[in-house]
Length: 319
Image 1 (tube, rainbow, N blue to C red):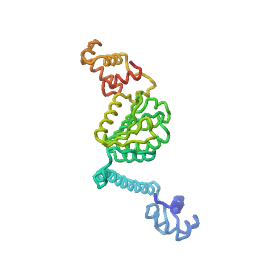
Image 2: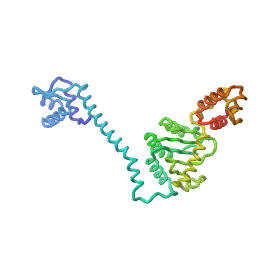
Image 3: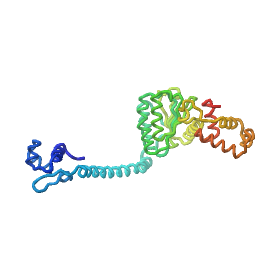
Image 4: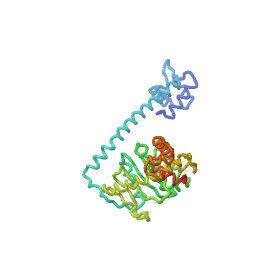
């Protein structure tokens, strides 16, 4: 609160009595007259003491200290406004940087070395402004990788970026990996799981992608891809993987099936029949009723399509 140790001693000394003189304070605290006088001037400016009738009186803490807190909060609010202004300038400055005199970035960039790769991921995450899409095939994740990824991931989530990640289902069997994924989910990330082996990738704003140079040998380094056609293909691979993946919340449900027998019948028919009219006849219900059944199943499974719901149900052993 801007109060020095000596000033606090004097203020506490005065709190114990209704009024004190400079001489009494000197004797009570073992300070010189000049020290007491200079400290009292500061305490008066801070609104913690009154000086009148040759003596000094402490201001009620409920008034004096509360005033200091309010002043400090006002200063913090000013700082927060300044920081928000600075943050709003990032996109403008980034655009100027990209349009500057620097040579354009290569369409394909090869990076070697773990530190170099993390440094480039940090840079790409910093300048991302819309969405991060990632597939991580590792299981379990190594501690050093989690610690390196945490500041990058959380910074993107704090800035409100979309954040979608696909991981191996077996990753949830490792306590440390699962704890980190739950931390990301709590911060707003969407996480889904797959059973099959995955292709590692991280995509920023659907314009830049980072993939391993050799999927079977991560030590060989990574490749940053900026060529629009190649990036579009990588984005398409991610989206197809995402659509067939299962939400982490469902996978983490200890195998409990949320589907009723009717739901399972609906999914079974969907997996075998193309037309809703035919499926409705097989279940012996009207077309409108069947479509209501389908919407209910999709909602239970947090699926965006019938195909995705059927795939998830089969992966979970519910069909």
